[in-house]
Length: 122
Image 1 (cartoon, helix red, strand yellow):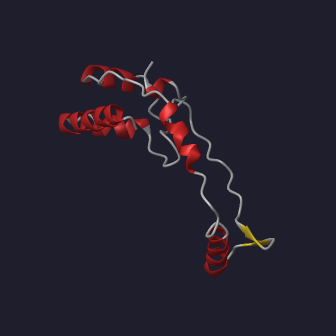
Image 2: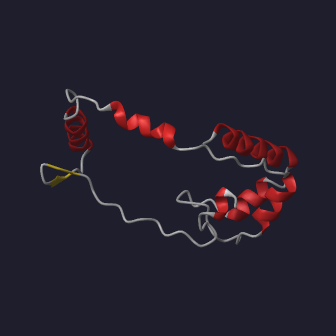
Image 3: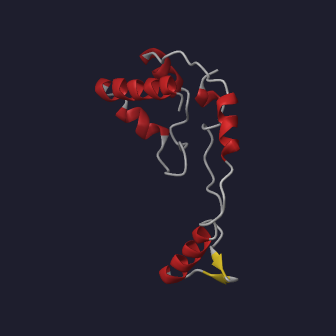
């Protein structure tokens, strides 16, 4: 199973509701208020000790191997997606990506980038 098959991207995406940032029980409606909230939040951890043992757990995860994408596999998979649905919160439609990837140079570059990410484990 490929990474894109693990996530349901073919449906229209509904953006999550956004909750306003609060500081001292007040909404941050001005940039200055937001600055004070962020400054206060990040400085609370300034002198705390760090427990780096949690980093040891990262090595316990075994890397996955994905076979490189072929041009045919990439275009056949892309053809399955609804042109009016979005890839994500940026509202880019599948039809936009399909249009760009009609250019072989763009398609080959995207495949090379994707294969590099998979090879590096991203």
